[in-house]
Amino acid sequence: MEKKENPVYSETAYDDAFRTMEGRCDDLLIPFVNHLFGENYDRSAVITRLRNEHYIEHEDGSEEKRITDSYFEISYRSVTKKYHLECESRKYDGSILVRVFEYGAQIAIDEGEKSTYKARFTFPESGVLLLKAGNETADKAAIEICMPGGKVINYDIPLIKISDYSVEEIFREKMFMLIPFYIFNYESRLEDINNSEEQLNQLLDDYEELFTRLEKEQDSGNLSAVSYDAIIRLTYSVAYKLTMKQDNVQRKVGDVMGGKVLDLPCFKAYDQGLEQGLEQGREQGIEAFIEDKIEDGVSVDVIKSKLCKRFVISEEKSDEYIAKYINQ
Image (cartoon, rainbow, N blue to C red; front, side, top):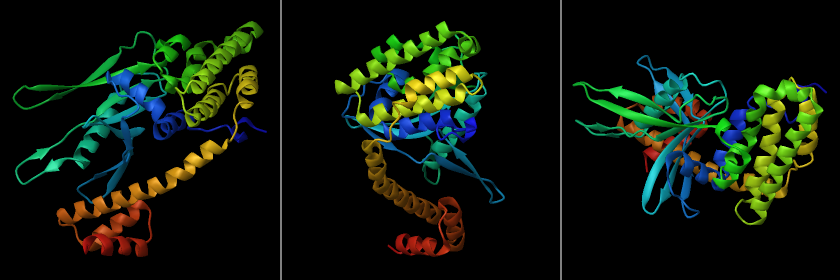
């Protein structure tokens, strides 16, 4: 079987891993947010995943879709904050700051408060996970917005680098969301490891220690079964893609992790439980879209056309939604 035909292979393995953990695993996401943004959320914090597809409408009527890696809000003790996270697998060169600003601006526009003589736009808290940053990369970046009159607004973007975290630090800070990407700490040495049995055995020992400690976290109640399963599978998928050119590493790591990857019932049950919530969120998004277009004076025919395109639904289904929400 060709490597890319293996079921564990995914061309988008890194993005898939990040989005899966962000979208499924509250007990992974909350410590990550706490560490990145200096928050102090506990298990009572409520996470709501928000629409991460945003459309820029151009003057000619065309639309450009932009998708963030993750966009969500956390409500805690009567305070709600919105967050936008990106996972960058390319070597950091600062170019992602443009993307972060574009996404943040579009989120602010989509959810802005508008009246006849005033518009208020609120940017989300934004941060970036860097998989290939070196030690010389700073812990945060900044976007400066220069306003008329000389006023400058700083939009700070904290950066998390995989290279900064040992196994000990990951467990001390409860940064379990980093585990699937831990293999990136070995990226520069993979060719040497592939040709050295001693170094390869050390790599396997490191992973055995990591998974043994991870299992203890689950046994002690610090990690849900769903999150444990997700980390194991995603670690395998990420490692498989990163080691495509190192046959010995890929085979040995696969032996260790392949036996741990099981399609357990709890993961399937979680997927099934999500279906109802996802459908409800989709319905709310369609309702908000229609109401927004009506307020902007957009005709029903244009709304219908945009509904079909935006939410990938039939004209008949679009008619049902329009009848439901315009005439309610």
